[in-house]
Image (tube, rainbow, N blue to C red):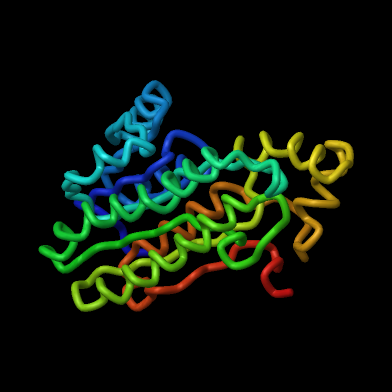
Length: 248
């Protein structure tokens, strides 16, 4: 795989989970990676591990992103949160916050990164979506809405960026072995009226042909390929990594 020597990369939510796996993959390809995360200490730790940089940032503060200029060659929009609740019980403030973090913030970061990418006729934007960007599930109204919107943002970016050497794609994993998934098991159990032990088989993996969680490193590998020269003709796409869920 062609490497990213001399290139810079920015990964949001890069201090743990999928983001950390993406950061390690890109650093392993030679990129200098900036870890953007609300947890400053964790961002510093991950940056030190991979020889990168840390950017402590609260992406919910979108006003601060409106005048941002990013000189990055690769942008991975990964930061996300989850809430599991029926629509009548879903907190409106939480719904709005999830759209800000997973739609508006990626838009503003793309907006900030494109001028630099256009100027050098090279850019790679990878949006960490989800199988829930392609399919819906009960009790996840804010997350499903945000990921569907992210898919649209990614495709418009691909159309506008194509003549400038910039690609934009989504990766769409199923349930990944991360703290985000671990934390929602109790919520899933409560919403579905089952025990936490039953959540994995009866909820998380019921639609998957491959009955296991996705590993973060698998997602990181796909992100790394999409950032490489080999993926120069891949844009506006959504790459499923869901064990066959979306084949149904």
